[in-house]
Length: 454
Image 1 (cartoon, rainbow, N blue to C red):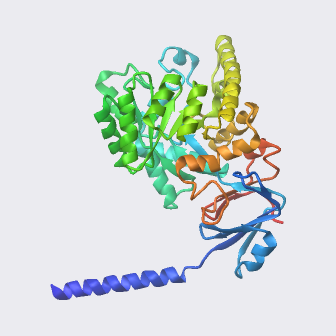
Image 2: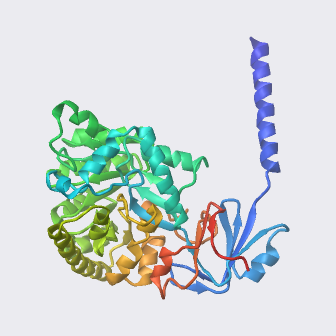
């Protein structure tokens, strides 16, 4: 017995030594990325010419190209992006990568509760979890290829679909953005889906949601999600959610060192989220000026979801034949959204509240990849009156702070992940450049480079 223990210890020792030797022998991968301009979203300053020295997965130094190249080790790989503008990798702070809903036929829409959305959601839930993750993987890749190197996936991914996708990406098995996963949404019993067959309804809903009825159940729901190692808790507030339930969720999540993102669209629900001490209020359609002031004072983020601000509703209906009546109704709704959204954006800017922006993308967008559909939020925010620099901050530095990852992402600075994107022109002068990202690097690895080498 003693001999076996001794031999086991000897084997462990040599295994550790061998691992240390292999680590010491692993080459350091050094890359110098050069461009005509580098934008710092936090200050708005532009470094020109500019370069970022990347060592393995992290940014080591930022500065003038000649100096960094002179100080770089021999054999450094040089990527010259010519006249392009470098920015930090983009962050989509509100997305649904495991959902790709197509609008059903008009007759189906009118006969169902939540008719545009519910049939596609039910189909996704009913399919196998494995298939759902496999369908989400290419959507994740398309987001990455459009420059979104970090995303926060806020539900609609089954029990653990987004955590499984996150782990596969982190392990390098498939390409995709860095994911903060929320697991199942916490909801009230009547949210999203109603009037299911009682014989099968409960098992179906349990695949997608953790439904809350009482503070004790709220705490258990948070703990149920932590079993799957989630990064954030997502709550959908409806009018039947109580203050006690919401406060219990936030308290339990914070005990588990998790932030809470609350879907809240009405003034009453937003107030419930504020009073509970939520970390971010998602959407904010009905937010009042007084609530914006309170959020500002408490440091609560408003996560705007501008995808629907400018005609998106009509666009996703292009996959079906639409009657003149529905076409007119959609057009009226789109115009109403444009006016309300523009007014909301101006109030948000005036209030000084911390804000980020997320796509809330979960729809099939005809003619676009998922990443291209996600990027439509940039011109939409601009048309709503948000300055280009504020838009860029909303998906870089601001978003990183809201996620609690400001030490890792959101800026091109030493010590942060080497997540870089480049566009051909000046995104401050033309925000539409962010819809045409031409270079993407994540973790020091080039994902896409459509810029000819100089």
